[in-house]
Length: 116
Image: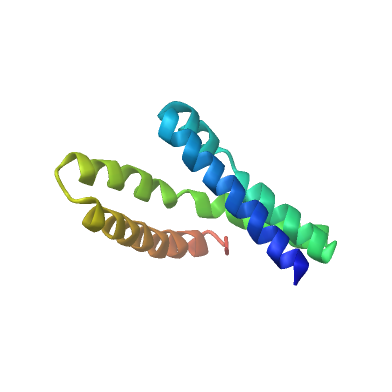
């Protein structure tokens, strides 16, 4: 239980830190947010919890393939906001665009023998 609380605290601190930096500098905030910080933390926690490098390698490969559809979110959100759509509408709409993108992407990957 202590390990779970520690993982939660460290993860929350990283997110809060990047968010605060983003308030002061969108460039630095974007660079930090683009780093695979969450992936690094998740892969580290997985290894520390299991000691299984094959699980780490498998998750790392799945993360690689799962990144592509997230670009739909990162493209649609600013486009919607810049076209006058309120944030409260643009955020879930962008998430929906991304979800549809993931569904289509998974179908395409399966045709090529790739599973997430």
